[in-house]
Amino acid sequence: MLFPALILATICLDLLTKNARPDRTFSQLHGLFASAGRPLPADLRRFAFGQLGIALLIGPPLHALTTIGEEVGWRDFLLRWLIRLGFDQWGALLISGAIWGVWHIPVILLGLEYSNHPFLGIPAFVVYATLVGVILGWLQLASGSVWVPAVAHGSINAVQRASLVFITGYDGLISGGLGSFVGWLPLTAFIVWLVRSRHLPVRDVSPPETAIRV
Image (cartoon, rainbow, N blue to C red; front, side):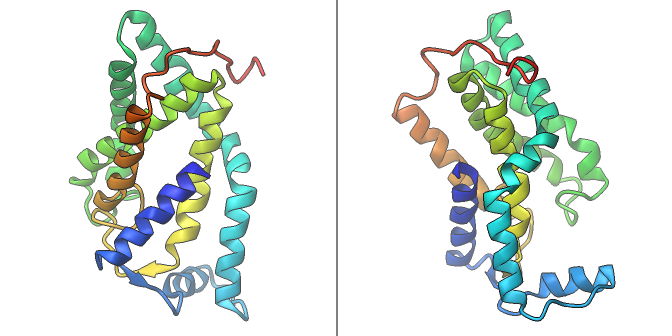
């Protein structure tokens, strides 16, 4: 529930700062059904809340089956390899997160992220990936299991799209998700809490448990 809570905080900030407004007609869903050539559900509101409920309950473990590959590579391998090389936890977390963001450059240039800002989207995604990477890396180091960040990563993929149908009028770079400028605020606030509560750096790192050793 960590990332769904951060996504909810982002949407609330979007609305409070008027960088988005409630989509009472569910215009995004209208467009999705129209582009797919499918008839609209009888009750779009019930459909939207139903999809969000499914995303919250079963989305994270289902999406973890696809995010596990990334987490094995970026967190279970790269993060711990950097620490073994002699980097402290902060250095390893920031470097691995930034590399993870740079790896997404082709996706951004293809317009699959920040579709209206293909070039500004590159540094924006690197910052976003670094912030998320710190949190996912903390989950990896604190738990010792790659499945923990995989499920957390899966919760982002499952819940973010399902929640954004409730707002409209947002610019993906400025608002509308954790990857936006507004979305960086809850991510940063949570990292600050980790530091102030002394959860990060992780003092007692659990033995690594990979996707194979479960």
